Image (tube, rainbow, N blue to C red; front, side, top):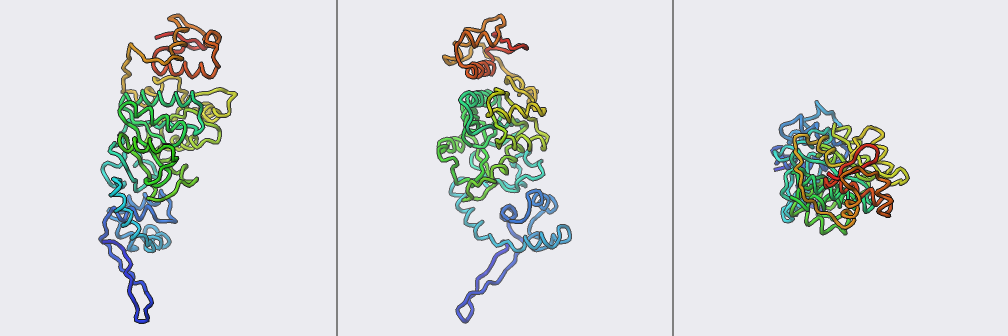
Length: 375
């Protein structure tokens, strides 16, 4: 049972409401109610959960001595129980699991942050283990950066690492695509209800993630993707991850919020550098200036976040036409990047992206001074 409201008809035909309070409510219902309660911060909600073994007394006003009249008044005034019942029936039909912070399979790393959500809505069977990394960046990322994000995610997934991102356009989509090419070890975190596809063109990716990876959100069914939801969503991405990699970001990119939160939570912050002449890379370059780890190969990520994981080197590497062409220019003796650009007659940014891709595939390696050679 739970705290409910009984409607009673008066003799004059008007309806009056008689409040019926029950204190032996289902714990999951109580946690969902706490999550939906307005006027309390996330850190306060988590504190309430940590202070009480069961939440029924909170809604009965028993927390007044610890948290004061204001908080207990808000708890007692909650009247969304019927909405919760309706949503739970709908979520069950959708195959969505309600995961609470008290459940054993709630992500351990996420539980450690001070403002962890007390409830997550989950679609998909993948459990979020300790070997996780977030790959984030611009929604308007260049082709080169999307390619880099996809290749990095693919390689990390092949090593058993779960790739976390936000299912948005650009870098997020590329990261999920790359991870799903391997073992499907990818988790997408939404800034809306789990019944809403945003952006709409990613319907195919949502379906694939639900089947092969996992989709998570703290937002109730039907909640729209409002602007302020995405910075809130970013704390979950950071909290789930052992490290956050920013691939391309301007100074105003939301991925910088994810990086800042990761730093606050004690996670590794990493960034891939870009052209100093392109505003789209200003944010990522700024992170590096502020102390983020500069990433110029997959080995850097492994060394920073997963030192116990050994990279297995494959002798044969699949290269596309552009990669094969640049690879043919680079020999077993070092060659300077300027020479590679001159010989290729390609755009500088394109060459730099291909060189990065070849490094990720472990076909070449960089040497200080701007030189490259084959491995």
